[in-house]
Image (tube, rainbow, N blue to C red; front, side):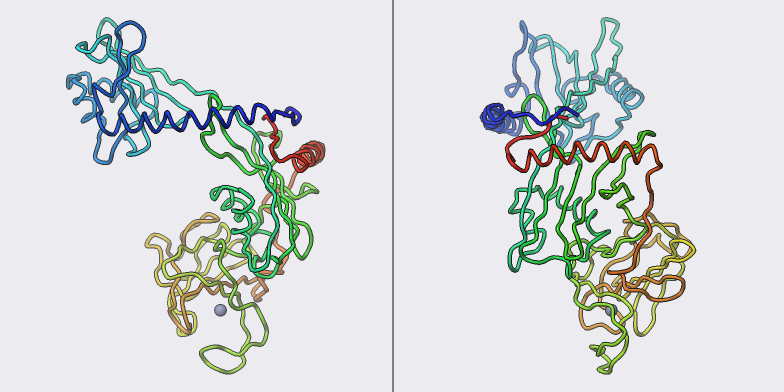
Length: 419
Ligand SMILES: [Zn+2]
């Protein structure tokens, strides 16, 4: 990683260029949408002309190729070449684009470029013998690390504060996923707390294409500053670690549903809302609307799935020798997630509802450690992966450098780190 540099002028220039690029893209989309071919075509060198088709719903590769005048033999040859060389067998509507080039208006198509993502192009050319050759070209990506910081205000959620700080929605979802291992968004979020996120933005030819990964997160939680860094180990795998290099991804999540408000906490004594008398609440309730997917808090195996009077529809997972989690009041189960099914962390295992003894749609979530109910918000959870000593040493050096870069960016948020 190169050190942060001042590219203020480039930033201004890039914005200008981006503005122009957006305008041009709109014009291009307009042309494609109104007249697919051949008037939407553009001329390149000598008389060759290229037209672009954005795949629409209902389009198939053969339909589009036949529309361009390819023979059935050519259609089959192109489809076979795409499948064997680029692994492409279906087109995605509103995403994939195809460019057709012919040597002049009346000539048959001699080159087809399939564009499945801004970072990849698959070029098919027809040689003199009529055979189709396929080549995959990766588009060069310019990745920048950008920094955004914000502060929680009165009555704010972290999501609102994050949006105000200019953090894109997709990045906020990832940040939530990470922080959910360490934080209880209900109890830990207060006005005045500061947070920051360092994340990637991907550019191609000066134009921002999409956002990349979250590289670092910091949140001044009530119980202490939560910091997480993405780090690549010597074996090439990446993960998130806290400032000391301990694995930040825990075996279980404290809050399985992102951004869900806690409506009832774990307690050994509370007045039951339906029964009316005092009874322990052995889990945490999260408000969520009926039908919201419930992700597994951790990887594990389904050990129970059924109905009882209190829990309504419930499902229980065993994660390892000591931990189990239980999810209650479900409206529906997932058909293929049955007793004995192994599930990944984050995999949907059911849907929020209000079955059993419940006053409204919510998820009742329990963590059971060695057969005893524990408070999901405070129980110390084991990390999935910790660093070995060599990786840890590298991590601490990397973290020190990254922290220096972040300190620079905090002083001037218009700067970025070229990766
Ligand atoms: Zn409950």
